Image: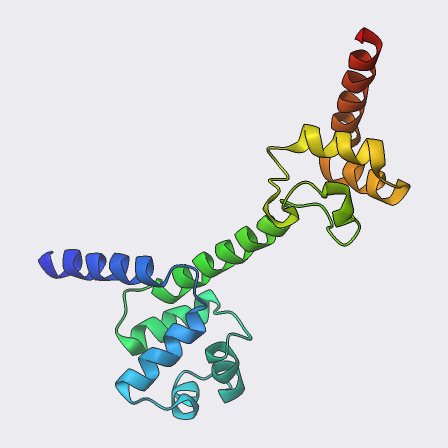
Length: 169
């Protein structure tokens, strides 16, 4: 029981340390550390050497079946490599979502925001000002990008608030 707890704590520490890193890079490190060559390892696991090579170069992911084989061969807790693969995939998705946190900046002219550091604009928090600025001074392509990124409802809401404020003056 004590050994299982120690193994679990080791695995948890290992996973926390390598979260978000492609498991192939970790595999490559482990193989070098243990003096195991990729080709013979692949053959002993009934895998193609190219598969192991691609994994260690982060060109291919680790499947559940291969994870079981690798974990056993490397003396890791069962599922370690697969969990690392899952965390890597999660990190990739998070990285994609960061890109989605901004509109397509190739469409937006920086001159529209002459009074602001364009690279420091918080596109989520400052959306009312951004939409107003683009509605006032932007071209059709920029207005369409605002509608695509923020949604037509949000743009209409800002536009209507702008009209109401103009009428009140």
